[in-house]
Amino acid sequence: MDVAVFNTKSYDRQYMEAANQAAGHRLHFLEPRLTPETASLAQNFPVVCVFINDQLDRPTLEHLSAHGTKLVATRSAGFNHIDLDAAAQVGITVVRVPAYSPYAVAEHAMALILTLNRKTHRANNRVREGNFALDGLLGFDLFGCTVGIVGTGKIGAILARILHGFGCHLLGYDLYQNQACLDLGMTYVPLPELLGRSHIISLHCP
Image (cartoon, rainbow, N blue to C red; front, side, top):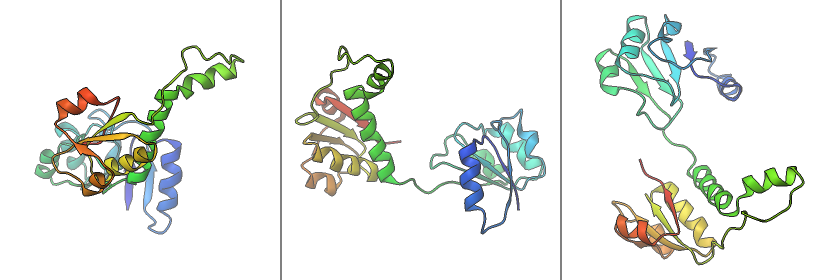
């Protein structure tokens, strides 16, 4: 099957070609974002593969449908960049990634917390210039800090477990309490209280 793959980078091509070896689809990699202006590049392609920066509004979807596209596959779990009502009306099926590794996302969130606190991104630049001064680079101990986690599903719960290992006090806000978080000693509080009491806040919700 011929697939027009929009908004591609070198790493997209590398991993998609590897994943496609068994399936044998004919992938046509295109660098431009999909927009109403670039939709003509997908003419006669039954499948279009997109990413979060592509614009799949009604005009784009109508153009795709009129020129043979029946399926849009987004390389993301989110789909807010796609007008689902318009897609249904023009007869285009939309599929998405069911989920990312919750560990990868939670661990990356932890890396961001450490980077922002200890300012390792700035320290790295200074050291490369031969400057070892600590001015402006001092952080604070995470041990004993209060961290608020907004959204305690799979990702939020894994981050809570990581932060618990750092010795942080955990506050949570979610429509539903997660027993795994309660087992770590998390206290669920109203959102305004979480925002007021937390030294660090991590968002893990739509």
